[in-house]
Amino acid sequence: MTVDSTISSPLGPPACEKDAKALHFIENMTRNTDSVQVNVLAEILAQNADTEYLRTFHLNGATDRDTFKSKIPVVGYDELHPYIKRIADGDRSPILSSKPISEFLTSSGTSAGERKLMPTIAEEWDRRQKLYSLLMPVMNLYVPNLNKGKGLYFYFIKAETKTPSGLVARPVLTSYYKSDQFRNRPYDPYNVNTSPDEAILCPDSFQSMYSQMLCGLLMREQVLRMGAVFASGLVRAVRFLQLNWKQLAQDFATGTLYSKITDPSVRGVVSDMLKPNPELAKFITEQCSDENWEGIITRIWPNTKYLDVIVTGAMAQYIPTLDYYSNGLPKYCTMYASSECYFGLNLKPVCDPSQVSYTIMPNMGYFEFLPHDSTSSVTLSRDSPPPLLDLADLELGKEYELVISTYAGLCRYRVGDILRVTGFHNSAPQFKFIRRKNVLLSIDSDKTDEAELQSAIDNASVLLREFNTTIVEYTSYGDAKTIPGHYVIYWELLVKDSKNQPTDAALNQCCLAMEESFNSVYRQGRVADNSIGPLEIRIVKNGTFEELMDYAISRGASINQYKVPRCVSFTPILELLDSRVVSTHFSPAAPQWTPERRR
Image (cartoon, rainbow, N blue to C red; front, side, top):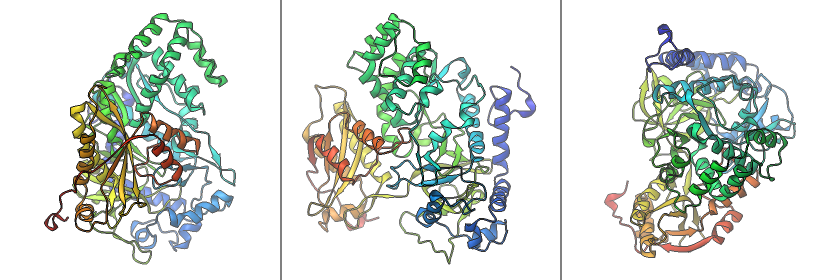
């Protein structure tokens, strides 16, 4: 088709006129970042001027940035919890938002150790849907002809709960998949998926996964892209295929759907698609009966061009496993969002996972940034608000903690994400996600965060290469029961050659390699202070982390948002992990440390 040149974009030649309009919108937003932010803040403050929360701080109807910054405190969830609890308990007065709270969006349950309730309003889904509508126009700039096939995406919901007031509480993606915006979305040839909505909306995770996998296999030659929300979700899908391929092949051979798929809507739509296909049954059997699953994705779905998954932050540890299963297919991260707010998108998705940066769209909310210095601790005071910076005033290379204000009533709320400015698109900064601001492990004065733990895991994994082995999954625990206390790291390994398994000596050296990677405070505690004992790695049976996720889901976690906790302390989880341990390993020596190396 011919695209109107007057709405073409500097980002690149659009695939169609609809894409051209989307790219033009991105350009308009990013060229006018500060003015858009001023308008967004004014709209938020005007809309919620009569709320109890804003009246508490005597804003008196002001909508300008200076007044807002001088009077409204920077807060975390603990400060907002009493207000949120009142809403959850049934107080319908305008507490945080002048518009009715339509539901609560829950946190993933594995971030910050608790499930948080984030109030939202109905109109927010129009704003979020606008961001979703920008993703494919950007991807079409880099990957041509995506309208010639389909995407195989593994999406899930969980059964929602209700607060005492009757308001629904559910994960943000469950809310999206159940929204009118998703269910009544217009047909887009560039965004057609293999999974029927009935399968996505099935609350039974087994039936949902089975049906989505079956449909993906039926349409395997049409699949051009594959994905899940997190990289862990796609790894889980491959593991599901390993466990269930025989039954799937049987379904293809007979043309009859597995009897355990009992959800009427799912069974109806999938049965209509399923016809006897002995050739497909034979193909699946040939591919999946082989013990070697290297490249299984490209063998079964040969036209797949890329994997659409989040592989930043803690998800980076799944990259080797996905590379193994996909023969190194590119992995693209497209979007940056949370339960609190949708933030932005990756304008250059075709890049190495380590180079992923997101451009925050200034229309999504009002964004402020607290300069982050990992060597110091910033205490925020209501009486003396900190000098937060605006979206248009950030510096290249600096790190910041993200603070948001939303139309739903969150004001100057600390999300907890640490971001580093990597560049700019027009006047909009682009960010690399560094970590969630949480300390994972601490035995004495040491403090080890998620990024440092991930780096230590990466360094230790190098020692496993000679054994053709990778770390599939991991978590950690600060064991204070021993004297002195010590770090315990649980590893699940993927051993690709059973005749060349990692030796005990090599795994002991992995312990030391991790300790050498930690900061000088940790190493001083090990060497000089004797306040920290040798690091321990416990190898667990294959499938252990699948059991861990199943346990979390049984307690209300969302399969779609689930992330393996990088540190655990809950006794039943520790008992599960310890019951699956097959070997234990300790550092054979102390790490290197001298006062001169302290940092």
